[in-house]
Amino acid sequence: MSSLDTKNPFNNSVSEKQFNGFFVPNHNAKLIRDAIENGSAPFLPDENGNVKTNPIFNGNTGFCLNAKDLIPLQIIQGENSNMVATYKTVQNAGTRVKDAEKGFFYNFQREDKTVGTSQFFFPEQTENPEVVKETILKNISKAYKNGIPNLNKTIEITSAEPEDYLGSYVAACKSGATLKVNPEIAEEFKENIAPLLNNQTAKLENKNQEMDTLGLFMFKVDQKANVINKELFAEVKREHQDFKPKQNNRKPMEFEQ
Image (cartoon, rainbow, N blue to C red):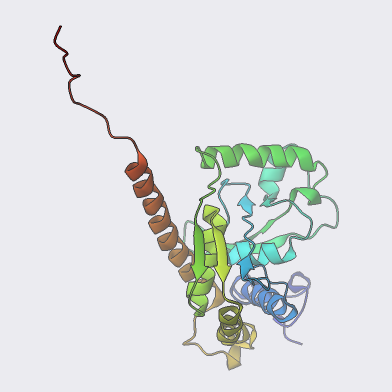
């Protein structure tokens, strides 16, 4: 068995490049694929076409996570809080991660452009969840000075192309907009994203190098989500201005005595 096939890469000679470049995205691709197959993926609609959106907040920055971490964490969230923290954030809160708890591995880019790996933990995985939540909520307040977005808009997914479909989903998660999709489009989306997920989990010698990696694909999803939200918030701003009472600069009428 090669080092890349093992379920526990820390017990062998897997290099940092192999762990970051293959194991982490492969694991996440498998999570997403399994969730689609068993119907539990968070971006799939109910029978009425309604899609629940659930932002998960990065305890370090206070902002909603980006697509590459948001979607896998939603899949494994269970009954945990809608926020996660790194070891450092947990330590700064004055507590520690419980023994034997497994974190969610994610990649990040260092200043020298190399890729590193760290872990996120839900507050419930720590010895003092409430103090961790309190620390994270302070960071969320700093990030969203006007409160967590709760846009009174509905986004309708009209495309089964994976980048468009998930771009709309992530946009709704980040903006608080409601989300709808025709279940037939969702079924088509499931078929369309399968090749990318299968390619990501394929052995290195069998990968189609011309196809996007999961990381690059999720980066494009975030870009799409940002464009959608920029347009939505601009629309809300225009509507607010249209309904704003115009100031009356006319002089008051003078009545003859």
